[in-house]
Image (cartoon, rainbow, N blue to C red; front, side):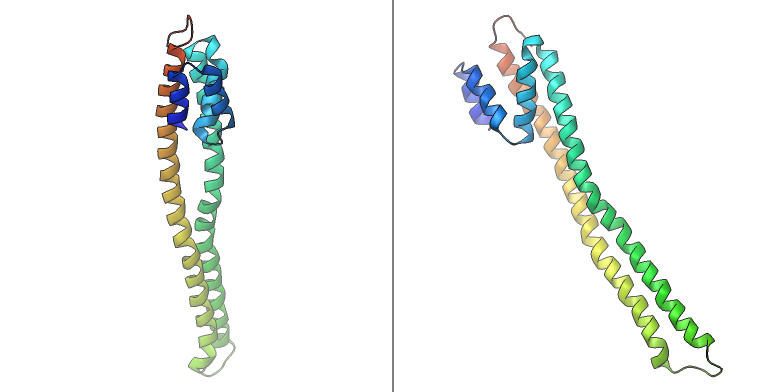
Length: 165
């Protein structure tokens, strides 16, 4: 997209460059389309429009990433709930007996406690890894979008009659 947009601008096909940005589904395309729409009001107006669209797109990404963070945060709590439930079951066996219970009678509750803890961690660890990797990717993507968008909008603005960035 960057190369195509830049080529259109170099060839002075401003309307084609704008249309290219309008149909491009990327965040950069959306930002540039907004910036080019407002560039007649000056470079600052174009940058403001791009920034607003960029912030909106960033918020959308963060909302989607929030689900992974939620899963990563809640899963260990669900595992802990199962752990407590399993231990309560084991202690109930001990409390209900007048003699020492057999290990096999305690094993059911202890097993439940360990399985739920394991399940919570098996869910939480990958979810938090994916969340952090995707968050870093999103931050990098938005940084690169900002740099590319500003550069392309400057090139576009330079070629408009009477408009200088």
